[in-house]
Image 1 (cartoon, rainbow, N blue to C red):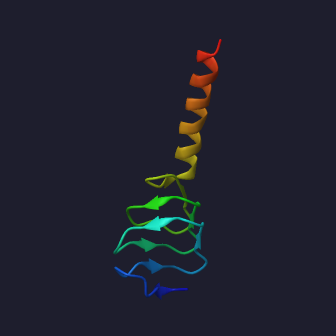
Image 2 (tube, rainbow, N blue to C red):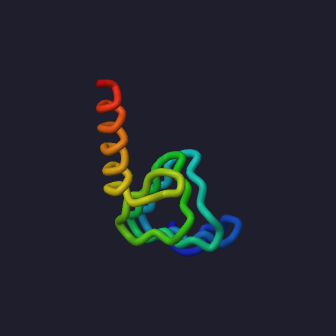
Length: 80
C-alpha cells in the first residue's frame, strides 16, 4: 500500500512495508519502501526504506540486537 493509508494522523506507508502485530505508529509518520516494523514496536519517527525496526521506542534492529547481547552478557556475568 503506497501513499496515505487512511489511518488517523495520515501515516504514510511505502510499498512492501511489513508491520508486526500490536505495533503502534505515531501520527504523521512515514515508513519507507520495504521497511519492517517488529511486533509490539513503537514507531515514533520516520523510517527509511529497507530498515528493520524493533522495540519501544523502535530502534534499528542491529542496534537493538547489540543492546540485547550486552544485557545478556551482564546477566550471565552476574550469575558467576
